[in-house]
Image (cartoon, rainbow, N blue to C red; front, top):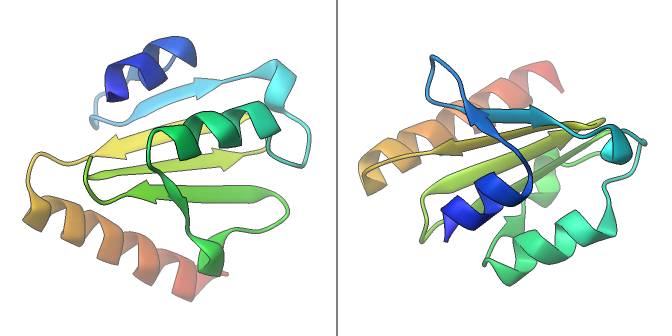
Length: 100
């Protein structure tokens, strides 16, 4: 299921294992409604606590994935195990609690 998201949005995996990309057509301040629909159709939920006018964060517990959009920049972090996913999610929470 994640493969189609990665391919459709032209994301490539970096050295840290994070899928990243940039969409010029999405670089407006607000997230593109087409992208929101795709994420929701794939079972992602918006993380309200850390989503702002400039940044949107979506998570999918079943796929163990976190998708972040920030002014056209896209990133998709995935985990192999539920434990790794929980660690990844907790690290994200700590980061945004500290820097928001």
